[in-house]
Image 1 (tube, rainbow, N blue to C red):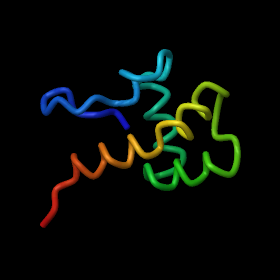
Image 2 (image 1 turned 180 degrees about the vertical axis):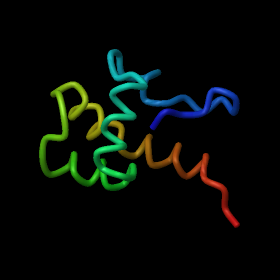
Image 3 (image 1 turned 120 degrees about the vertical axis):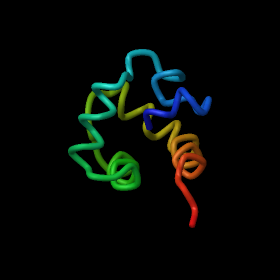
Image 4 (image 1 turned 90 degrees about the vertical axis):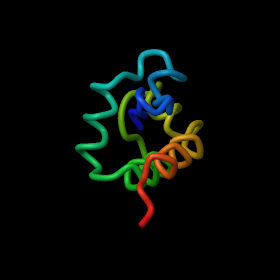
Length: 73
């Protein structure tokens, strides 16, 4: 969700104004994983309306970035 500046993978803060590192970390900490957060956002409110809308709209983008950044063994 936060991306990786070094590897050129932008996080949500680059596509959603106002959705910064603090919001992302707070939501991830509360829900444990990105997938848990995205699943929760799809069925109920997880935060302020802008965050809710962004998580729903960019769910595929966030999943794809997570997959790119994950190390496959």
